[in-house]
Image 1 (cartoon, rainbow, N blue to C red):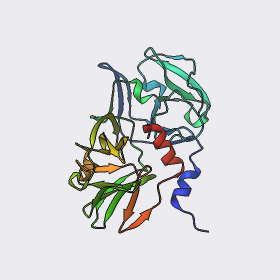
Image 2 (image 1 turned 180 degrees about the horizontal axis):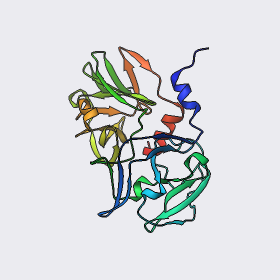
Image 3 (image 1 turned 135 degrees about the vertical axis):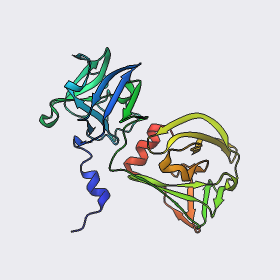
Image 4 (image 1 turned 90 degrees about the vertical axis):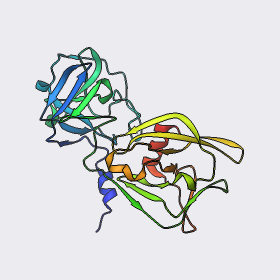
Length: 271
């Protein structure tokens, strides 16, 4: 019997997973290099949707001390907004360089000599000689952008927010398709929001709010003013949360995204 690839990927979501990488990985506290490894692993705890780095104990230039595990467990998908301290695998939290709980030692035999690291606990991360932000990239995820001449229309409560035949469609592994439209094709006024987020695949996003049918809709849309090289095609374009608006392609309505991934994203970004 055939099997949809997404279902195959989802089957492993509840397990502790890892993948070796050949990249040299370093982490710094201030100007001091605390982690320097060419033997790093990408590790996903059960239900975590993005990986973190784990390195051999010998590659950490600091004493490891037991730490109280304060994060507990959480139900559902563990998106990037859920702190590292929330663990879903058996093991013990450790302190690194005075940072309580910045590491986690798994009870799993295959990872016994490794310590998973809290990406946000360190001041700077490098892969080889290039700095990285947000979290490590998943080697099994990718982003593709394609231009389309199909008519894309965005509505909310019957009000037309945007309409374009110059949209760019962004396809990202395990994430709903996003529709990026030229600013000139947006019909409603966009007000800058204080919210900014960072995606390791696309860069830093700025968010926009808008008044629709007399009601203020916070963080309804976003754009990437200066995206990373993989997403340069969406520079300055505007995307709306498909989970909150109605999208029509050539006049045909698309169902709003649902499922665990969309729910986790809504929880993370408060939309």
